[in-house]
Structure formats: structure tokens, C-alpha cells
Image (cartoon, rainbow, N blue to C red; front, side, top):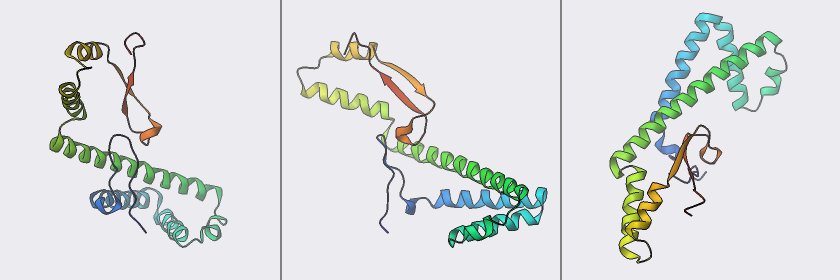
Amino acid sequence: MPEQLGICDDYAMSSPADNTDLRNDVRRLADLLGQTLARQEGDELLSLVESVRLAVRQGEQDQILSKLTDSQTISLVRAFGHFFNLANVAEQVNRSKVLTDEKNATGSWLSRAVDNILAAQKISKDFDQKDLQTWIDNFLSAPSIYCPSNGGSPSLRIRKDDNNF
């Protein structure tokens, strides 16, 4: 199976081969969740979670899921919900580390953008210091809570001022 990279405008997502730290973090969190489930709900729920997890991997989930009581189903959904929340937190922490390493190695996206603008300004006679200052003075940005184009990660939205573009 070929390696797949996530598609994003700002940066390439890590390949599965590069996610050892993330996989280890998720595994540790899953172990802690398993211990918590066993301690608070009993070994029966932990056994059920493991049975369902293995059945799904083997494509035999219908046989086990069809036999669940409503109470078991609710507990199972909650357990998997907690797991997915923990996995998402681990992914966010991992992504923050990756972005920090990238920023430390290559500078921030904003400093790179300014460097590119200054380089373009040197090459082109159509873009002078006054144009750059006008653009910067009218640059509007707002944090965005959810951005579907990059998997829901927070991002910076750039809005144009109709008077200057």
C-alpha cells in the first residue's frame, strides 16, 4: 500500500511512517483508558471493548454488536467516544510539536511570506514600498475556530478590504 500524505494548503501532513511518537502516545492513552474502565466499570466492560475492537478488525462486528443490550451499547459508545477524544488530543499535541519544529527550522509562515514579498519586490518594478505599506495597513485577519479545508484545525482567515484590492 503506498504511503499517503494528507493534503493541506499550508503544510504536508506526516506520513504514517513518521508517526511513531503519535502511535506510542495513543497506545499509552488507550492503556490508561483501559485501566480506568476496568477500575470504574469493571473488567466486563473492558473485555467487551476489546472483543468489539477485535471483531471489527476481523470484519465480524455484526455477530457481537447484534447481541448487545442497550446498557452495554451505551457503555461501549461512551468508552469508544473517550478513546477517540483522547486520540484527537494526542494528535493535536503531536501536530503542535511538528509545527514548532518546522517553525524553529524554517521560521514562521509570516516571516517566510515577508521574505518572499521583499524578494518579489526586488525583482518587479510594479510593486513598490508604498504598495507594500498600503497592503500591510489594510491587512485584516481573524482567527477561525473551524476550517474544513485543513481538517478542522484553527487557522487564520485573510479577508480583503474591497477598497484596496
